[in-house]
Image (cartoon, rainbow, N blue to C red; front, side, top):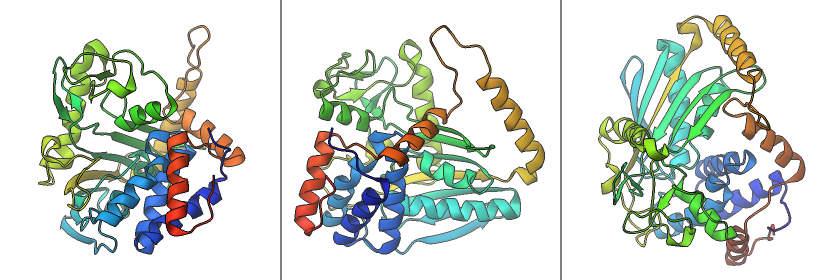
Length: 348
């Protein structure tokens, strides 16, 4: 690993690279915010290692550098947002903003996203709503890379689901792929030469492998009970593609190309709930506070620690904000190439 890079330096570098490849200010801001969420909170598979990928999408034309995002309210608490082939974070942060406005008026705000692209860590958007005192659900589908339970071909994408609830200190935050691991983690393991855990990836024939270089598809979450993970992948498919009229996973062009000129036309979905419309903000906060107290003081197995969803991320964020973020070798090399291409001061 290269020497850790300070958070503010990494943030500035990402924005300069995106702007250097023609992204407008809003796209550079939102794309950087989503990647930095991943890297700061230890979700390295969806962090700044994606910068080169997004730069390639901007350069090739897959991503609209200056999208004209359009929001249409369809009912009191619902709407559709046309991303105009924006980078996914640009469209999804905008959808969260509109959903929060709808929820403030109607109690719930649900927004389907159309004509978007890869949006990175789903938790970045759920957290944005939680920071505004709202509960949130965020999901999207992606190109096929996950086999079904007992299946032997790619079917669903990694199809993440994130849920957040505001709480004292830090929110309760779930951010999970419905595959055993996200594919970006496989790529990270390839970069670092780390073997995969058992039962998370398969070769072209659907046979389990631990060598990340032989991985051709992922297993659904759940191991021998993978039918549960496969069904959760279907939940993301229903909300992100079926409900929005966008492409199903098998119909989405591969994230890794080779075509980086054609927009991918992906869908996503966000839903935001205002506690004031239910038990009330005060009672909801009392409930989540009590819940987290009970959870964190629940007896743990010997040598183990009980944590709430998000606890690991908050601890990692505290350390990385203080000491900086280390880049894996492949990402460090990519950053050096990007700096040379744009005549920027390198960060590694």
